[in-house]
Image (cartoon, rainbow, N blue to C red; front, side):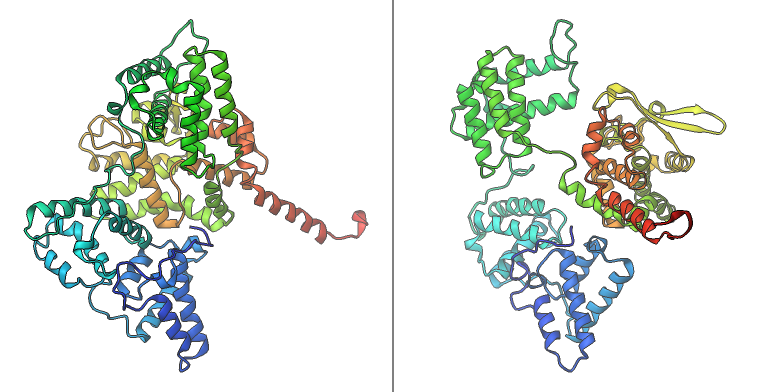
Length: 573
């Protein structure tokens, strides 16, 4: 979240009773209370407005209800709004005083709108503690708050319900609640007499699905694609193409081709006609699919589309299509090419936070902070073990900033290599064939890092998996490591909770580069080797923008030294 947060446009919370006071209305009451001292009114209003700013919501969309505000503040990351712990605690106190003055601090019940008569009647049918009732609860409150009757519930109302869930920001899984409510409503139709009979569309378990299943596409196309993909991973001494591709790259190609074929079907092409790759890559057909995908984003090129357009001429060349076909596809590639140098803005926004030394200190100190908290939990269990596991993951990313696929795959006996017994020196090593760009990676680990790893392996890892095998981060299935996506989310949630930083695993690579270059301007070669970039140009393009502020600070310091230098003696004018 940035300092200038885009606020939601709702005029009030979509789940609270329409007559309930909002934060905007409370602010107006405070401002009009002439009996209160002016500094007090200003401080209270500042606190209430800042709560809304940190939450990224308009004051008019926040119920002035203690339960809602408590949960909103619990989820907040005040550092993202430039508020330290002291300022945040002061803000909470001031907001509480304003609520107490208005008689709102002891409001009974929940902030959700009480159920209307017809919704209360439906609510009485399933057992109140059943999964069905739990999944319908929030939908019923939403409909009551918005004057929607049971007979009016339809797919359009459900879509508005989903939008409201996302805007409210207090629920962890808006899509899951939306999908669960639709399923439970349909189940209730078959189970309870008198339940309204309108069936709702149940959204996909995996979100909006654009790509069609292979079963909906010609089997001959699928077979040809799989044969082609198999050839990408094999060594062929007669091939003119590059070395075998990694499994992850091959899977990405599979997804691209299914996405492209699906786009053609969505554009009106009969699926049965797409029986060969040669059909998909015919210039007019390729143009149709690319234009359809372009129109889905209002005619603006985007990264996924540019990557697909870049891949198509290479694919056509590889399967032996005529040169004129390849040339035409290259033309489309150029039209859709996105010139992008350096780091994405979402990464830069986080990295700018590291201009503050306190933010750097908070991240670097986090592993030991998590260790102290985990060791303070008694008795030891899964909670403390997961906390220490996250501490180990963060510590390794700080000392050995590898990609998440490598981090998740670490095996104790294979990747930790003892290079010296006394004094003990352990290196974390990844052979070239396990690294994305086939660069061998090796990181000497400090004694403090290995002490943390040893503690986790000795006392905590077994609490997370009965059969952890040799994996540093074991998964739920025996013999498998924790998935990279799951581990990255675990890291990000924890870092955000304790520091307010959005730090999925890959962003650590950017962060350590910036932290180092801010203190050692221009030393790109160190960062290149640390991150395993093949070409220093990649490193420079990524970090030239990120270290701009640091370069300016060094320049300013130089000018100030010159300005303050004495002008007498040998330093004469």
